[in-house]
Image (tube, rainbow, N blue to C red; front, side, top):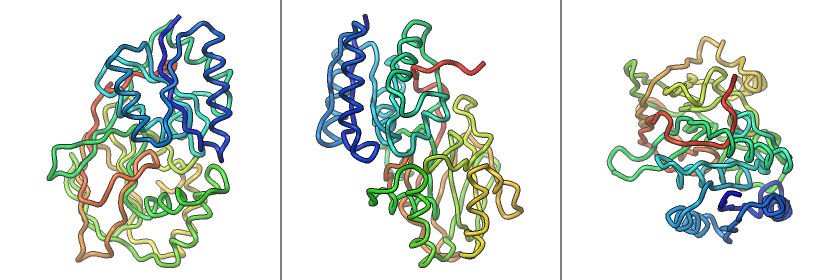
Length: 308
């Protein structure tokens, strides 16, 4: 029997989160675990509940929802020994996808959590991100989006339908109508990239937007970011390259680069293009540039099997 804290996003999965959460709580209790429901009406209060319970003593924190709940969990458990369990029942589920965890499957998710409680958690990298002018940092597990991908993310978050990557696609059209390339200056371990640009993503995992394979070779445990940068595509150019992003074919385009780096500083360069949108990570708003992101190897322990 394990002592588990559970946080549920009641609006995950087009409003089905409450039902999924109730099923998870019931399944864990029937399996004999001691379960604390740490759910709240807003993410800030839920985070506070989770932190208090973690300090008081848990065997694991389990989040039920999409990448936003995984983001919450990562910010509670990073650089601690407390493992994170994931029941993927949200819209995107990109972190669960990268970990090979079940999606939309309560029984499978509970079984995966229980197996990892017995065999031990998997250590993965997490990324600290924040303003270079401030000491405060936030953690993410998936990817930091700083280009048109971030603008589309923000619009998709404001939409209630459809589900998954279709919501991201629906949000793309309105953003393209007002789009002009942004100006960037990136400083990585390899040097400086300064250009007008369309996409800038500092990826820890391969996927964004509910299955868009933005960084095909990114790994959650290699100690590196895959920084994907795309030059100044026109609106028509974005439309042409977008479908291939689901399979990761965009990285073959001569105007797309992937820079592997432990750290990246992303700054606006107004003399080169428009002002970049506010950045998002794991689908959650982070804030305006400049931002610095740095990998911390093995900072989060997840209840998932090691790849073999």
